[in-house]
Length: 73
Image (cartoon, rainbow, N blue to C red; front, side, top):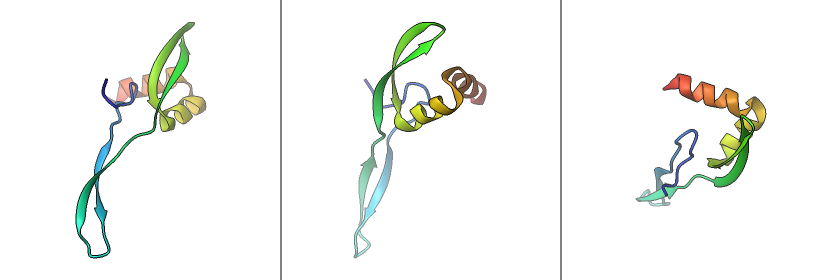
C-alpha cells in the first residue's frame, strides 16, 4: 500500500539537508497519514488521509472537498 493520501493523492517529497559546510544530502519529508472513518451518503468509509486533509474536511465537508478535487483534474 503506497504512502499517499487517498483523496488528494499527496505523497512524500524529497528535500536536501544542508550542513554548516553547505554539503547537501537527500532526505525524505514524509506526510502525516492517519486512518479515519468518514460518512459518505450514509455509509462509513475508512480512508488513509493526511492531517491537513482532515482539517480541510472539517472546514468544508467531505462532499465539497471531493467535488473540488474532481473539478481540478
